[in-house]
Amino acid sequence: MIKGTQRISFTIHGDDRGSLVAVEALRDVPFEIKRLYYIFGTRSDVVRGKHAHKDLNQVLLSVSGACDLLLDNGEEQETVRLEIPNEGVYINGYIWREMLNFTPDCVLLVMVDRYYDPDDYEFDHGNVRRDMEVK
Image: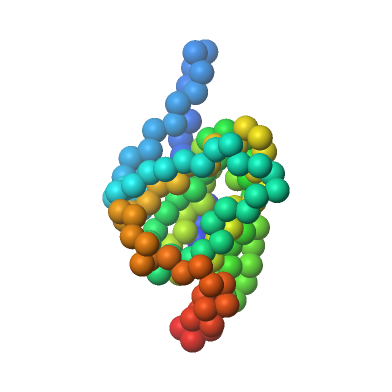
C-alpha cells in the first residue's frame, strides 16, 4: 500500500446462520467515527470521488459487490480492488482518491472521522499533486 494508506481486516463472526462483521471506533478503525455513508447503484462507467481531503481520515470497504479504489499520494499511485466485505482501506491524510469500475451490486461503505465540511475537499488533482510535492 502507498504511504498514507493501509489495509484493514475486520473479524468475521459467523455460524450456520450466516456472517456478521462488527466495527467499533478506536478499536477496529483508528479513529472515532463521526459520519458513515454508503454509495450504491453506481454504473460501471462512472468515476466517483475525484478529490482529496485536507484533514480527514476514512475507511472504505465494499460490503457487497466490488469496485476499484485509485489512490495517489503525490509520489506513487496504486489501484486497490475492494471486493471482500471484511477488508477495507484506511486513508490517512491528503491523498487523491477515485472509485471506479463498480459492479452492479456494489455497496461501498465509508466511515469518516469528521462531520461533512465542504471546505475540506480539494477537487483539482493538479493542486493536490503540487501540494504533495511541496511537503
